[in-house]
Image 1 (cartoon, rainbow, N blue to C red):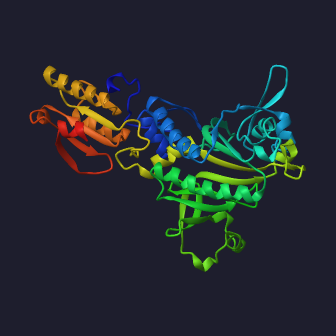
Image 2 (image 1 turned 30 degrees about the vertical axis):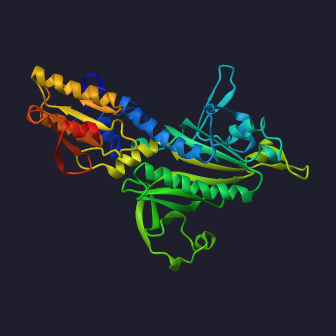
Image 3 (image 1 turned 135 degrees about the horizontal axis):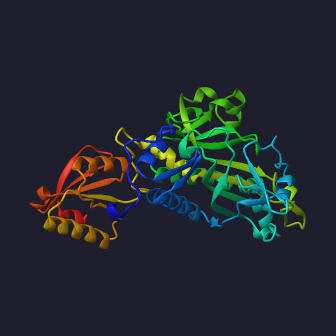
Length: 416
């Protein structure tokens, strides 16, 4: 993509009312637009990031046999009443609306009830189990405060997966597998080293559950974590009992305390939703039994904000190669017609090699401004082409997360 054709522009200053680093940088770099607190639009660069994150999650979930679906955001009152969730006392951060005829509806903040209803059409026997279904879908939560940018939205994109088993034993096998899958996802997203499997209060679903917490001063949680064992406990849920249920004595761990961001969670639901909604199967003895369910969430937009918070430096965003909007930021300092033509040719050649390139072809923009924009946008590799480098058929290359600058031939660039 030519940067001159990109309708978004960088900004030197973030909106005065935006306090979170992730939103400040993403707005300044042209990734997102703030509609209101907690509600953001994703612009061309931002949408590319979101799609890349989704693809990594999708690949890892598909690898363990999960199937992708897409459910509705509007949900019926009857479904939520069946599980006692149509109540401000039970759910305090929800939105509801109504049709023209007065029928009340809920705006989805999670999808346990709808998916249980759907699966009643397809589950009748133990032979139909197990299976796992997931979606990427916009969720709505009526947050009292929305001050963490895209990490705590009133409208946000989430991946939620639901598992369906005949019993707790087979569920737990998949539950353990999902811990590994999540760690693979976070590692591929570039935050694996900073992310810890964390024991926490499992309400409203179970006594305990597991979260995945990423170390960051911008976090709203505090965890006690063991760096070597890669496990943690949410400080607000700390107790001697949790150690017993976790399987280790307290003295077996070397805990440090730090702020953290919750980037994922996994819950054992059991029959909490299948039983009241009548999701049953016939077992091998001919008896009808409630399906045993699990729930597994990852906030996709929250992840995007977390990655910015954790990896950004004082110059701007630093995207991991796995999710960057482009692989290469080709920055042209050429102004003479012959040199501009050579820069254009290099861009076209890189595209033909299926390289994803953002080409800063803007004329009349100073070199320092182009470099500052490049640092702010955060593409992993910057390639500078100028009259000086062209004199030696070369380019200047620099990785975003390194200070080293290297001069290489154009042939070497194209053959790497």
